Length: 159
Image 1 (cartoon, helix red, strand yellow):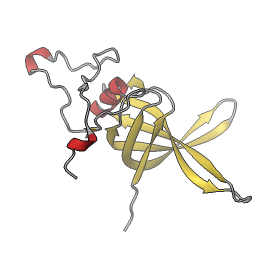
Image 2 (spheres, rainbow, N blue to C red):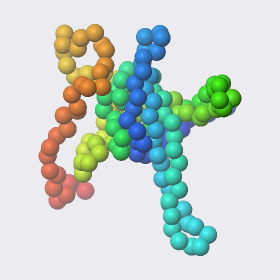
Image 3 (spheres, one colour):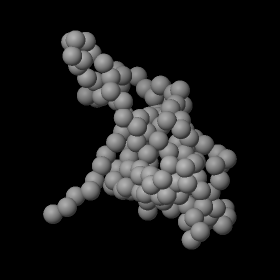
């Protein structure tokens, strides 16, 4: 039995870059940094940071490019894939990437509280009626998600 599944949750290191494929599909790429607490040899506490390259395809790529921004939090579920290419000045190069199959958006950068948005590849994130959706082309300048601006009193939570 073989399993190739990875889950990472961290901060975006750059805005997603959306490109069109020759086949007509979309691909977006961005980076995520994850941190973990470590104990140094001298007994002090520190942090270890890992950087991950994320690749997303199709409608999910368009959605990520539209709503994710540098500094924001994202939870990515996918698989690891190693890509190689020949560079004229460096020779053969390799990169391990995470091909995202599911992405959950965290609160927007700069907001104290905000809902987590779950976006699966087959979910329909466009809430407009079909007659207003147009040709299906996504643009990075589309209107942002209308997050509610309500204050939650911790005393109102029943648990």
